[in-house]
Length: 124
Image (tube, rainbow, N blue to C red; front, side):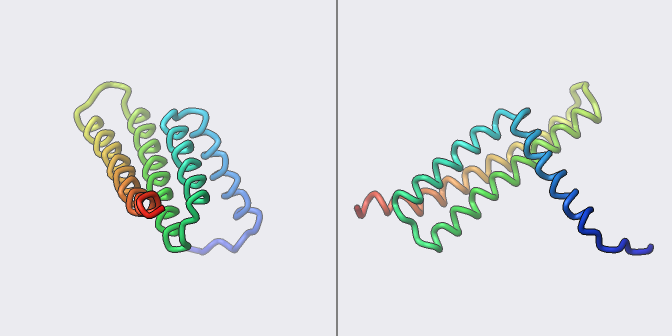
């Protein structure tokens, strides 16, 4: 298989596709707005309590984890809806497990947030 030559235009186009996907998910998925509000809240709180660079890194990883799992969950749900509009136990399984991944990511992020923020309020 012949490898395609590098194209700056195609790289820029791939970013356009990615930003288009983000615009679409904000228009169509209500959970994304909850994640957005939580993200802004965490960033504002982190600036207010002046988290360390290491703490900021953990918060950024936690935020990214939730966003990535939510985006993948949405893709899987849309793909399953495309495969079949009918209720099917295998599709339900896929959607439920995918939603469970988001729940685990959110719970993990909550734990990280508690580890970072609770000591800031206890010791202030």
